[in-house]
Amino acid sequence: MVLSGNDKSNVKGVFGKIGPHCEDYGAETLERMFTVHPQTKTYFPHFDLHRGSAQIKAHGKKVAGALLEAVNHIDDIAGALSKLSDLHAQKLRVDPVNFKLLGQCFLVVVAVHHPSLLTPEVHASLDKFLCTVSTVLTDKYR
Amino acid sequence: MVHWTAEEKQLIASVWSKVNVEECGAEALARLLIVYPWTQRFFASFGNLSSPTAIIGNPKVRAHGRKVLTSFGEAVKNLDNIKATYAKLSELHCEKLHVDPENFRLLGDILIIVLASHFARDFTPACQFAWQKLVSVVAHALARKYH
Image (cartoon, rainbow over all chains, first blue to last red; front, top):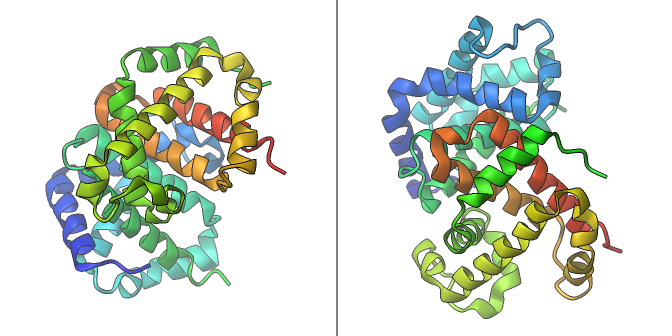
């Protein structure tokens, strides 16, 4: 799967608009993921997972930051997220299926807050981008 | 049998009562064909699917989207008996239509996004949970008679 020129500009467009809210959206993405797919909580036994928890906020900020980093280096996402990819392969070892769940929840958050931004074409591009990020993060798993 | 809490039933019914089945159905199917273009394989007879604009404007897509979402309404009306509700449709999708059940999951995911964009903040995490559960149960029921 390759991100076309259109995909890249669609993705940059979305993150350009949601930029200021990115950290909040990161936290909301996690909250939704923990609520909708409770099995994802198994990776966070050390967290306070109540709504609005400081840990969820902080982790949401990290996740959003990583996505932004990928957007800012959209021509070389593998390079930009290489260290994060190592971390997931060696330490975190989050089962690959969960990245899809996180991606879906992120799309829901964008749809909830910016419905007019998420046209079908943009939806497609963003979905492809999130898939690409997931692939990069799980690429070194074995 | 699937267990639904009273809250889940209420969240599902409340969202469904406000859904424009024709519009939502058309949008969901169009998005499926645009976001996951390989799903177009089932719709060779639908005519022009050559671009997102063509897909969104395609009257066969609109009509079929409406048909699909109308059928979804049967699940909403029969939450306690979804398996039986879709038994015949399951056989149809296997024996006549030859649709990989993965496509039901893809459509379910798309429907969630469409609902989120229409209901915005009213599509709370609890609401998303109930609807994610519903689309999973429907997908499972539709795959149940496959052989």
